[in-house]
Amino acid sequence: MLAKAVVGIPERDDLAFEPKWDGFRCIVFRDGANVHLGSRNSKPLTRYFPELLDPIRDQLPDRVIFDCEIIVALENRLEFDQLQQRIHPAESRVNMLAEKTPADIVAFDLLAVG
Image 1 (spheres, rainbow, N blue to C red):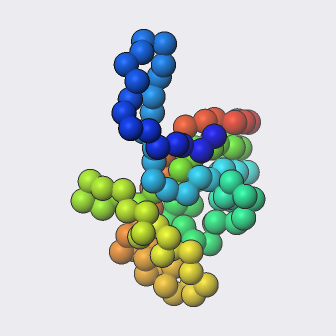
Image 2 (image 1 turned 90 degrees about the vertical axis):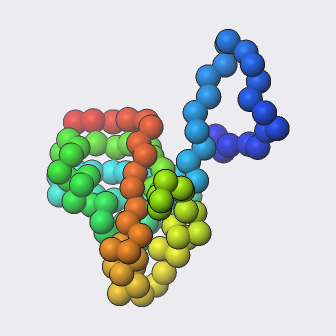
């Protein structure tokens, strides 16, 4: 479900809230050494975020699928404009931005493991 803007947070005990991460929604598929990042519209994102692949391989089970948000955080702020610049056809620019403004993943739903 997509986030909606509201004027304020309702003061009710029967509601729970979580932050809106200002990033790209992503499904991560890992099968051994193969890692695929896909958008919520099933578009491939893997080539745009090469710096995420080794940490996924190093820190997660060999076979896993999870829902997450890809973010760029600079100086304690989420930078959606910097994130959008990552979707670029030139591999050299993608690699340069991966070094200059590396992305992170905020995982929130484990969909499958094993």
